[in-house]
Length: 361
Image (cartoon, rainbow, N blue to C red; front, side):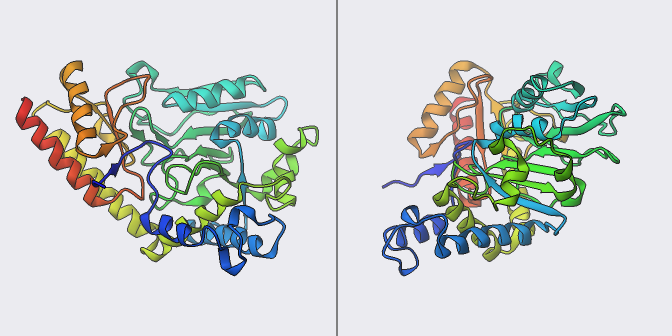
């Protein structure tokens, strides 16, 4: 089989070592004679997997005992509703920064639940940038400030985070969690769908500060209440056991490869390589995001004409570069270079970009 370079935006590439380990244990996990998918989520064998995943995530991200770690379902999209249901109290306002389609969706869901406010938005620029001034003038009665840390569709990313004082800062980190070192204590709640950097689709990680829990209304439906999942160690209902197992293997892979600091260094090199290919193309490759707001996870660009863009994408597939179509809402091209995408794949794609330009410029 010819080499495939997977640049899908999500579900995305997983480390080959992780897939091989899962493959080797698929029919006989830990000498049980059963697949991990067949084990009871109440069994001792699965409990060890569950706890290892939590422990590794805490270790790698520097999560202190001030926080709870939950493994939920419903993707980040369910968190768009769970966050305001749990944290938007009567008489207060939920503040949102709009930097792309997913922050828009989060804002729209919160608006169905309570009072909301748009603190900043870069929609007028077609989301080419992140707000440069992150010292926002928050309403006094803000329940929280919500940001989307990385914007997969537009290829922009927060490189520093808002200072919110006593107002809880909440982040949807679905597409850049574990890709760089962050100060967890700056956030009151972080949530992330796993299918970019953490594992397969099906499990959502929620990291929340314990002092938020006592103020959550008891009237919230049981499975939408964070307290339910904290009290039951994310086992109130059957969790996505196979996804959590793969999550634990991905976390082990990150640790074995030097931790988040090493992963961040690799990600910086990958992004620098591809942005250099764009910037040195004499305008043949046109970036969507402004330089100061560029994402290290999603490289978005287009070519001088729609015809050339289509030819580029078709030729890329012929050469084994998969998943480069831009999101249907904006078109163009997008190379998603999450943690599991190798430098070698990025280098091969950079060479392809150079060859295509020479043939068509």
